[in-house]
Length: 363
Image 1 (cartoon, one colour):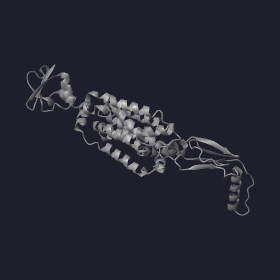
Image 2 (cartoon, helix red, strand yellow):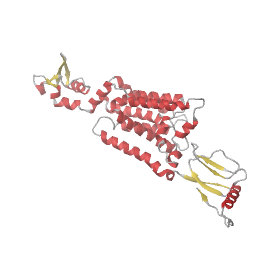
Image 3 (tube, rainbow, N blue to C red):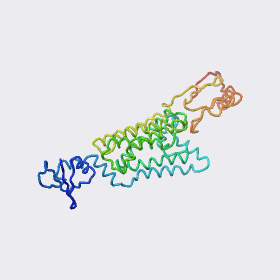
Image 4 (cartoon, rainbow, N blue to C red):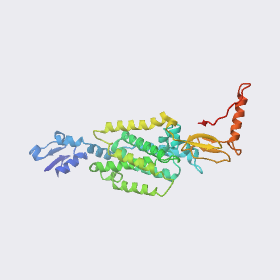
């Protein structure tokens, strides 16, 4: 079925499928005149007078193509990149700032023992080396720019939130004794969303931005994942979690009838992830029993033993935020018992004395 489109003094002839693609691309304006013999007969009519034109012009594909071709400034992506760069400034000195990494690292004891759920988000801003920061910045700026143009700032913000929380939560559970920092989970989330979104709306993506929305981005993902397989310092679990979250949202977010419902679902899930450790705190942390010379105590299972001393057992919070010590030095646990008894008697009312000593749990 042939269609004639007349606009600005020029007439174009095309098949119906091409006409549909042109309408979705926004290249058939409402004031253009269209003639299709089975529909309009021998006369030209305004494009916006055709029900088929109105349906195609209002489709998600048309909205995506118009947004990509408009090339609006990606303010959210630029803001995120600026925040990552500013967070790096305090670490620019020989050896970096280990304290900064520890204070904002995403750790299971930090999140569960202390209820500091905010670490799942702040860990995204902290990087351990210039190469670490530069790699994440390049991916976020490249793929995030086009994804923000296709989706808009609100949907991209939800993707950043979901991929950061997914990466942080899985890292805390799968890497309980390690510090997990950096925007790699978010970068993998953006790439995963771009790939699945590009496959889902392939016809709506113009030629120029096809690289972040197609096979090239998939190859980049595979190379990035493979490069981390042989390194014990790379948090593969966090990468996979961010990728899974982004890939799923790439199929759900963007223009479409379910947009509002998906947004509400993401916000509800994010609230639950943040609220659970904040509300439950230490009750979520696994505990284990440690004994030394007849003394026993319970300590968080993820606090590794640190600075072993003769006659003493010491465990520290991985971020240095607390410690558990059993024993009082080279003389062993019995000296600790005697010292505690002496201190108790000294502070007790006159005439008080210790009558019985029994083993007890000390939390």
